[in-house]
Length: 333
Length: 164
Image (tube, rainbow over all chains, first blue to last red; front, side, top):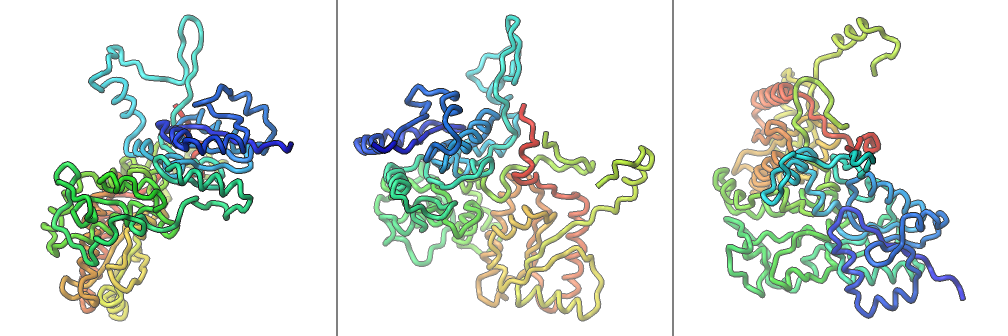
């Protein structure tokens, strides 16, 4: 019997939802398990890093890596798995675009540590101890991975073959991706393994999207009783559908909530946030600056709304530390 | 690049000799108004700050916010968008769309730590060469005061970014 192809799953800066998708395949997971040999999957199986190190370079057919890259450990694992795998797949929004952890790029590391370890109301830390890469305790040195100032996508760290979008990818997207890999007819490198059209194309409410739409203000879901049939943008809700890749079959819309953009842009768009900004701003009705500002003020957090999953992969990547005029180079280290 | 063989006093002199900061401004001008104003300023032999790289677009409404971010990401210190006065758009409404996008983009850039004066929208008609000259000089001076944008460099430098 021929040896089954080896597959690995790993997680970096992520919530675990992508792992859940694999389980959500339900009975289909059995077919996949029967077809492949899982050599590494920390969330479910007891393999260690040394087991991966023991595998020959390139011996793993495909590694599905979810999560953004934020710590030195994650970076090492990304390099290790890249070396061991024929195909490396960025699995899910965090790995593909930076994801929710990528919003940390709006802050600096110091204020994040302060906020989490000192200022949060549920924390008791009278001595103000912050995590550090080396710590001495009872005569031993304890080490932790270091954390980078900037959250990165997987492809900003290592070469990535394919991207599987979604937060998390839907079971259907995952199943299609796996079947594509097993079929042996591989798409061009760098392909996002999902249809390349905007979500509006497959939206169940598509028919109710007006040809011309103009709005005097935007509404947040809690401010309005949402009509279950009508286009959400037409109801004034900030729906990312026009600038987001489809393929997910619109589960959020079916749950009567607007799209938040997790599948990222189509291949014709470089920067998802800029594109939806462009689309949304031009919907404003008024031609007068003060009124335009009033209408746009109903979007309280433009970056958080437009780049919810894609800040690290955007053109600007992160908030810029204040440029001082002293002529010093920005603090990278 | 500083010369490694310089001694310290030479190095100080070397730094002192560095030319003052010259802002790099990328400008998107509409074909029907602001670009013609720039043309008129040129044929009238007006002198103005030479820091602007002009990209002609058919309408200020054609300026995708991606163009602006891409300019910043590629080293622009400021971006200027020039269009027809309200009511004068060759395509009826394009400049109003530009205005709405500009207002939201400016707010978003603020969240991203990019100062307000680095992005500017001006209505300059085909006959306003003098105004064109004033805007160019004013924009360059404002950005000069802010200094270089120095966007954190892209992924290549990450291996040097030391984790703590």
